[in-house]
Image (cartoon, rainbow, N blue to C red):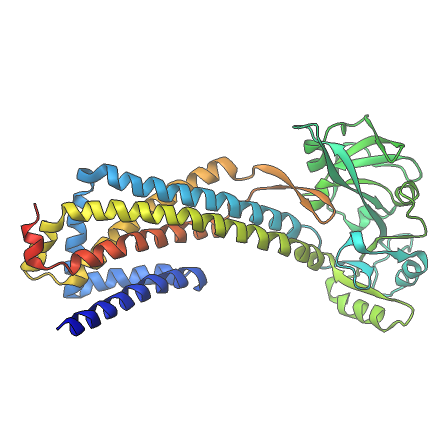
Length: 441
């Protein structure tokens, strides 16, 4: 007899473990459409089958008693709202940073780096290499017949931030005279463009907002040399975080003469990229790597986005554990008050499945409510909130992006917490002997 009881307990434990792990895995890895499809199937099951209709009846009874246990239900909602709010805010950082870099670049512009370099900061190109690449037939020519290209020097300088007055790194990019043709989307919003050969610079909109001393007409010093700020530009992408000046003067100021860190060119069209890349790869004089600018900036965003997602999931998981215990306590308390009610339902013919499913639906409903509150608060506070973080070439200014994908991740976390928080109390009550339940006060 004891062996049989032990076997039943073991099977029951395995079922609970499987029921806990499976939804978590499903919420994590399945496509977004699977969850709504499951709810549609659940609604159909409750509307068509007898057990489903009984489940709906028990669920309605449980919802009707929520006002009588408002305190414990509020604990569940507030706990899950806190978890989702923090998770959404952290994931919005990664989404905003990734969106900013993904908006940078295009399929018809390419960036050439020294062979093996993963970023501009680690690359060097000599003038002879630049001259050879400029002769490629796939490069767009302007009205004067000159290649639309920009040999660039990327330097990391330091400036005090407006909010703290502490020095922080800022990317200073030396650009060629045809840079406005390479990147035609860039607009001068105040002042004018710098003049080649003069120590003048223009500053990106994001850099102007975050760093002190970059108003039009100001003068800043880098490496002992004074530069006049003559304009502000808006690129709508990661270049908004940069300062631009004449590439030859930037190179001479920082003793990077005789070449550039990268070469950005505009192709005849996006379809010319493969031929251009093949031509550079088969030229024995060249040791370079080439990507479209869209590919390059997408790659730069991936490492940071992975870190942010890892941090977000770790912090969210730690907070979720606390929320699950809060949901467990609240659900145990709520079900303890309904023990006689549930035992009575079982005595008149209700099976265990309607009881378990109805309790799970109730806690997931509270979880969804809490998730909606948490996501709404994060959206109201953080969406389009401007921040800066250290990228591969200095401070990158970006806006938090509380995207639908980020909100969906938070909502799935809320449902998962509600499910786990209700599973064990529901199973315990459903398997409580009917006589014991009817004797509860």
